[in-house]
Every structure is written in structure tokens, then in C-alpha cells.
Length: 388
Ligand SMILES: [Zn+2]
Image: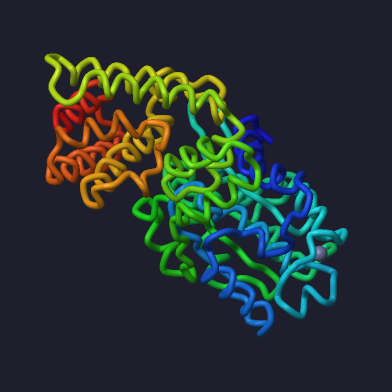
């Protein structure tokens, strides 16, 4: 397994392991927060014995898609009678534990690996080359034909199921299997970028949509882990509906320090300091370059900034969302950046509601431009001119 893939697994498990370390942890599907409609659907499919063989989990990053896919794999294979009757899992039996460790022979997670300058799910992981002996582990297409080794259902989780991680060739190789998956097989495709999933894949899967998680639910979860209420509120706000990110942030205090640095500069330079757009653009870039969350090997400086900018955008958005609350409610009772109340009240006086909406639009627009490889410096400068 490449380092990239290993890192991917590590970061997604951080939240899981961290939750598991704590006493009184919730069992089974109860541990999935804020996706009740998804859990209900999945449990029902198990109880009725009518599991969908090809699923597409859609929704933003860090809302629990991969965690839920792994939970579903557990439920499909759990050995505990009582849990099985409920369509749930015990998280305790041999099968559940092997899946937690990603060592169950019938559950596989396919993630991109880096070779040269490409980071993709290799075509070799999907199908064997004709005329050649298939590699080990067997490619998905050959592997699905074999009976489960230990469990009841073989589960394949493909994350991400969109470009650039899953290219057209590998995606197409999946099609046949998705059309007629063998009986004891469930294939789960995961994507936070639905526009980049091959339409032919989408049409063959049952879609399941994940929501952003409500801030109060995130707060409850973070509060279970953190002693500091102020910090927990800030984290929940910046997380912007993404629980996985909130838990990562609670474990990485440098993110809160970066957020403090960023907000200080924002309050110093907004609304109308001359040249502020250029300065704030450079600061935004600098902050993104110092986020150390999911490490990648051999990554260029620009690529790292591009990958981390969404986190910084969420920090900025949370400020403007609070400004809006201050405007609309005329009180600071419901703001989330509670350590910045004074500064925000001052800033709220200088901005009209219209201008605050426009600023939020500008940040959301910039998010999309950066995703589409626009020039980083120019795009950030433009964003700040629009905000100021
Ligand atoms: Zn179990």
C-alpha cells in the first residue's frame, strides 16, 4: 500500500479511533452523528435482507461517508445475533474488530496511491491485464467472483469514486461489475464531488445523500471530548457542518492558533485599508500553507495551499456568518466565534447586511475557482476586493 493510501486511511480513522478511545462510547450505528436518514435506510436494507449491491454515498467532505461505509460493512458481517436482528453491529465481535483494523478478508477499501506524479486508484486494482497472471490482492473484478472467505457479504469501498482519484479507465472497468454484482457483494462508491463522477457509474448505483451536520450536534460531540467550552464552540463553528474536521481540529491546536492569526489580520485590515486585498490575499495563502493536517509526500507548495484553502475559507465564512447573526438578531447570543465578540460587533457596524451576503458569496465562489485550478494569488486577491 502506498503512503498516500495509508495516510488517507489514517486520517479517516483518526476520528473513529479517537471516539473509540473514550469511555462510554456509543455502539453500532449510534456512533454515526447527524445522518439519521442514512442510517435508517441502511439498517432497513439489512433487516429486510434487500441490501443494494451498488451504492453511491454523496455529500461534502468530513460528514461521515467513509465511516458510515465501514459501519455498513460491519453490520453486513456482524456475528452478534441481537445486533443483526436490528440491522446494526456490535463493534465487538471478531468480524467487527477485523473491519475496524481493516484486516477483514472480505472488506476492502480502495483509495488512490501515488506513483510518479499521479495519485489515482490504479486500473490494476480494478481488473487484471489480459494474458497476465493477476496480482495479489486480486483486482476487484476478479475478486468479486469468489465467495466470501469469512463473512456473509464482501464489501468494496471506493473512495473517491470521482476524478482525479478515479480516472475514466478505472471507472469504466468497474461498470460491468456494478451492472451485475454477484449475490454476496456490496460495492460502495464515495464522492464529495458528484460532478466529477462518471455519469455511467452514477446511473448504476443507488444514491445516498449525506447532510452537513448541524452545528449544535457537532458542538455536543466536541464537548464530549473537550473541557474548554469556548474552544469547543469555536471549533464547531469553523467546522461548518463537517464533524470529522471538527474532531481533527480539536486534536490539532495549531489550527486554532492559525485561525486567531487570520482573524486578527482581518479585523486589523477590514473594511477599507488601502491595499488590504493584496495583503489579506497573501495572508490567506500563508495561513493555508501552514495547515498541517493530512500530510502528503512530494507535494508542491501550490498544491498544498490549494488543498488546505477550503479549511481557511471555512474560518473566514464563520466570521461573516456571525456578522450576519449580529445584524439580523441585534444580539450576540447566538454567535459562535465567542472569543471575538467585541471585534465582530465593531465590524458588524461597518457592514450592511447586503455586503455581508456578498462577502459570503465571494468566499463560496472562490472555493469553486480554487478547486478548478485558478491562479491562487489572483483569485484570493479578487476575493478580498469583493469582500472589502
Ligand atoms: Zn459485531
